[in-house]
Image (cartoon, rainbow, N blue to C red; front, side, top):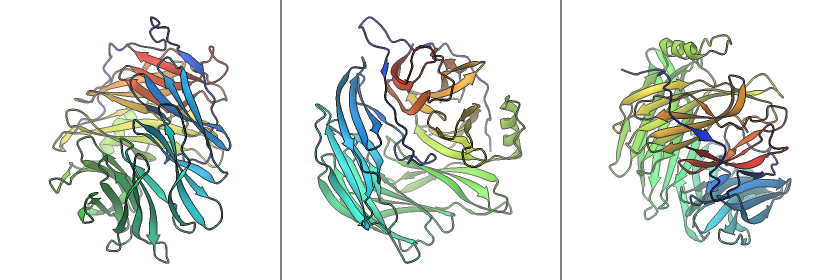
Length: 486
């Protein structure tokens, strides 16, 4: 297997500034009210994007205004607010999905009022004027069941509310639900019988713009990966399955993490990390393309985490901390398909150090690229060193990305060479070469209060983005800011 590890940094002629063009009188920043949502799973957020672009000049934001209220707000590129729609929530209600479809913004919430049932509600807001519709009940299920779920299509025109069916021992036997269009009109009821699979431990529902459903399953004691496609016009399922775990090189390995991504070409891609069952050490990365139109699975060459790979990662670590003796705390974070057909798999080292009230860390990003035939193209590692207090967790650390052609931009909050700032890195996806991180020049505050909330970062265009941040000298509180790359 031929791979290239840890490619050297390539300096870029990339300029980026925190001050937008002033010819049209656009504001650079406005005050922003932020209340943390402490009910979220820090490792598996229900809503990762709380700013949604509508066009190159407009966007909407989901913010928590008070303990019992969220708000959806619409802004233009000059940061002028067009309207705001308050969404009241109960004390037992959590937000589960936030989408827009060109006509309406939809916030889906999960409610458990202690009466023996759980419900999924959709709150619909007209994008033109902020007018709210009455909350629509999408699904109701017994509270004793597993938590009901919601899947949304990339364009926001389809929503699937679903519940799990289990036997008396909580073993998953099926999934059923209702499919809705972007106006919340029911299209059909759905049902998936999974009783033929043994030991299902993970089930993920994915929806495309046409309303076709993909059920991704890990079964047989974390060894088998199965994907089933249900077309909206047909109840018959197409099934693709592969045994990922087992005994390899005398080691019994199993799946420890998985990630799926429905890409613009219509194909579903999956990636899994496997580990040695005896030692827990990471063993390999495996990736696969599920092409249901051709009824074909395309497997990438297995990437093994060898001692040489660990040594190469350690060689990049200039923090002065003790060198790692094994890879650990690495999670698959994103699957990205480039315009030239490359699949980029990103995995990040994230962990909490110690027990309760201990700080959180986000460190190196591992990148693996496969060509259009799923052959190995390149691999690399970007080193970063991010730390946050326990009450902030991953709110401001980790990264946000944007793909501009074959350039992948990563935005992080870090302290580099004594400067605490937002930094932008550019990666050439054709060869994996990365540019040196460039600071935004904001001099982000570095104290005990929240200084950056990455979920509100969004690119309006490849060179124009918005973010919620607190500069150290220019603001008493958080700001919604426009940042431009030149």
